[in-house]
Structure formats: structure tokens, C-alpha cells
Amino acid sequence: MDHTLFANLCKAGKFKEALNLAIQGHEDEKFTPSRFAMDKKTGLPIFYRGNKRVEPDETGVWQLAKSSKDWG
Image (cartoon, rainbow, N blue to C red; front, side):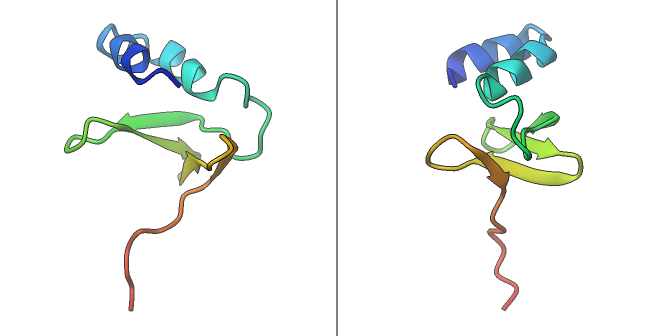
């Protein structure tokens, strides 16, 4: 995904187009995101499928996000 183009689409208010750019080529996968939000601290998008957070793996396939919290 081209992060610059994604950010420009978001700034222009074209959120559907930005989401389509992020999922391009992976539309029929089980965990393809249906929405996203921008992280206020980092400015990077956080993708969701329903209420579950998803992210692409090394091969670009969308998977449920690994929890980064340490509950131990």
C-alpha cells in the first residue's frame, strides 16, 4: 500500500477510496478490513473487521492482530 496516497485520500475526505487502496488485491479474504481509524499518536491507520483489529502479515494476507498487551 502506498502510505502517501492513503494519507492524501484521507485528508481529502475520500475514506472509501483509502480503504479500497489498503485492501486492493485482498478483497475476498476472511479478515479483510471493513473500516479503519487513524491513530492520533502515530498518524497510522488501524484497521478493523467488525470489532476485531486486523493487520496484514508478512505476505500481505489480512489476519487478526496479535495483542501487544502483556497480561502477565
